[in-house]
Length: 68
Picture (cartoon, rainbow, N blue to C red):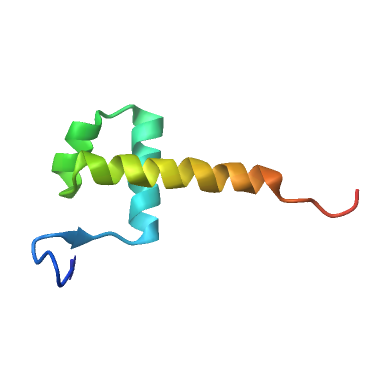
């Protein structure tokens, strides 16, 4: 667990961990409150990650493909 100097009790999550948690919610429909307890995060953190997840997914659809 990585510590944040401004918030010593706050856990830092890697991009891979955030993706796994958001994906878990989307695929299993586990309540966010349960995920927050399971992973030691706040629901507010989850909602921020989910917003980033969908914004990144949308930009993936905008990328041009090579010639067909």
